[in-house]
Image (cartoon, rainbow, N blue to C red; front, side, top):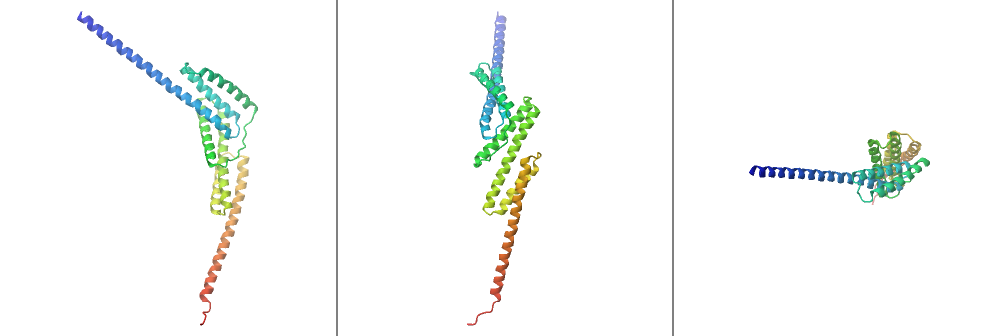
Length: 255
């Protein structure tokens, strides 16, 4: 009888341990799912934010399509992980509709490379940060195999060119401001830095060629202005030295 009771107790303990292990495993699976769902939600939120920020950049229908596809993929992954997520089915339908519209737009329109530099420094910084995030997103999608190499290369090059334009236009703007204040040394530094950035670019576009000629002309003007300024300063110094000698060696007055 005692042996039976002991056997039952051991069996009960084993059952409790097994049930506890199963429960812990289920809880771990649910926790892992929640982490993965949160990751997909973050991807969707980031994609939506980038789509909003695209309004501050030249139009790129292809980039709009890529970001909508990224959001849709994340939504589908969420549904697969947790089909009971509230509103996920409607979200997928909405994103699918948006993606189809973006695909049609991308097939009928070309990217717009015209860009006007904002006057506000904070806006410029926000645009540069947006471009950085977009390029990281492109790289991520390409590494997943979602984005083909040709599309990645084209869009990444477009963003790289835009980033270069922003940097060059900012330097030229600061150079012109310094020049207008007759701060010739500072102006020359800004223009030289801009010219070096253009020379370092591996891709030579019409913009780069035109800008190199323009900045070289501005540097030539500054060089001539500095020569003129130095000559004027030297003449003034010579005149001052001459006046000091005249005063030193002029005949002394007799009182």
